[in-house]
Image 1 (cartoon, rainbow, N blue to C red):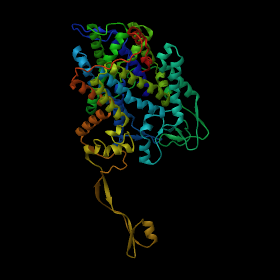
Image 2: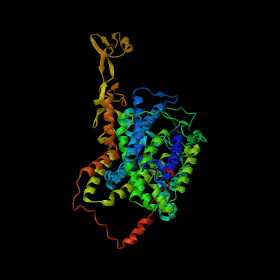
Image 3: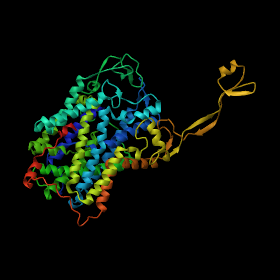
Image 4: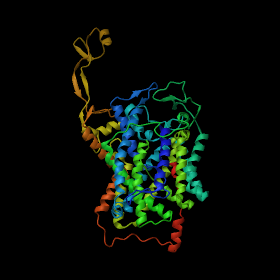
Length: 597
């Protein structure tokens, strides 16, 4: 399914880019569909945390309810429930996309009031800032092993959760081998910025990723005593829990060709499907995500207009913003029907237009054609999912950091005292919950002992929404009586001593509320309404861009403007305004093409 989802994302991006670039006027109205600019679309980062949480929660619930199966090598298989969670995510996004469609029909005056730079900038900063940690976790070996090191040890006492997303090399999170490969991507990016041409500097992420792939393909890991590897790497050895013992002294590779082999040579949409559903508990977070996406799109279209040398204010600009938002909303609905997450207009378009000095829509259509072509050849998607996750981490870290910087530039365009306070509070709380998610969700992880902590503790413990707890039998201990003395023992020992044995008996049942080590399976029946409300509130509070966006928007709409509140004066540079304007227009953003999305 991973290779298919990569291919489906490319195909979807290509098809929806055509809609955005074409810009058709809706007959009989003054409204448009599309921007008429090079507005290449791609999968929105904004929805990734919500999608991940919905899939993980669906799998966790299936495990707690005993619905998953255990395959022949001891791996718990919940694949069907993961697809079910993703299907609920797609269905929820389809309904919530109507919000962005509605926003597109608001008056320009209302839109400017709702989405000033301080709100849109804060939202974009928190999208990037909240996801930077994912890049670091990838570099260390993977997200799951990063979040469940202590949790697995607490639950089973069998050591930390090992990372299994780097080919045949299975090590603990933070192993120097993983970190070294991840930083090779960053090192190549630095080299390109020092010595590369303008084209290489603007597409450095792609070349840095290719360098990391090259290094990881040449690198091998020599296993030591006690190391583990994948079952596919050692098919003749016992496979326990999805892992086999590595052979000491043997070399193992960081690439896994299984993804390439399993991928179809030619593929298209709907070769893999997901059952659509609706999750009311996630509806509010998804609505907020669309608000953030709309705010980001407004800023992206404005920058694209400037780079394309078309009016960035006035009726023509307002119609492009309206058409772009309408296309974003409708395209997100179509993307979900295409089994891909919601799409949005990417800010990387601005850099490419500035670099090439080409604003022709034919270039946008050409990009769409190549995206569709890459998606149709399924082996390309299989190759991408085979890249070691630590190498991908180097790329992801730079991508999300660039998103943060883009938001910072946008938020600081009018940095008055009032706007500084709005940024201070929204960014402080938003990044704070990203750095310490246990503020609202105890345990911080999504598996093993963390689920016990989440049930018992935190801002709103899950035990508060449990209606029926599990029960266990109350038993008396087996005893042996010899010469008037009674103690606990078994029948064999008692017989050898010639005593009178009394077997253990069940005297009743008791309710279990302690949830000491049940991996979160501590309730047999929840109050569905309260549980949905709890999930909604905790997702909003613990998602950086959700809570940060709400704070920024509320303060912006309610906080009065000071009459003497002016932006900080620019720092003197010794240059004329004309020189600074030319340098600003010629500055090239260090990013890569949207096709990398």
